[in-house]
Amino acid sequence: MQTIELKCHIGVGPEVSGEALVTDDNFSARYDLDRIKGIFSRPQHKLAGQSYVDRIMVFNTAKGGVASAWMLHEMKSRGIAPRAILFNNVNPILAQGAALADMALCDRFADGDVTQLIQTGDRVSVNPASGLVTIQRA
Image (cartoon, rainbow, N blue to C red; front, side, top):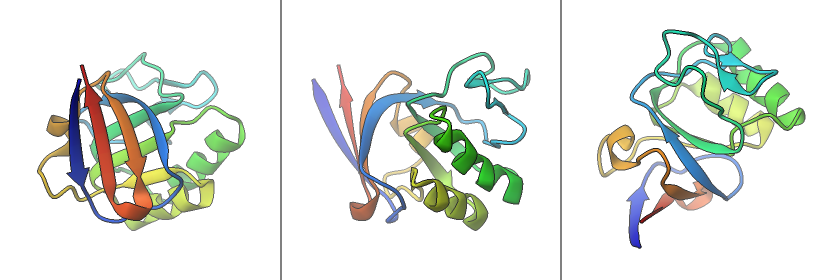
């Protein structure tokens, strides 16, 4: 078992762990997701058809504005949400949405492109208060 530690900007939300779901695509809760079924629904998205529920999602950047932010809260309140979202760069609106939803969110990784550093299926622990993401890889 290999352990990798990544430093990032201090984030928001609780400390969580889960299985990673990674793409170099961007993310919009409004346009990319079926928030009832818990899957990526936009056919052009690289994760189309895959479940995001209870996963540590990893993206390049966030798309969209206020609607995407409050949708994080709505998904969390219904129990159909990711455990955390990691970005290379996130916009302030989505960071505020994660804070409102009490969802872990971090960005700006010191070690490089987070979509290349983490692989789908990795076991990932996110500690937003410390700006630390730990990967357990078989």
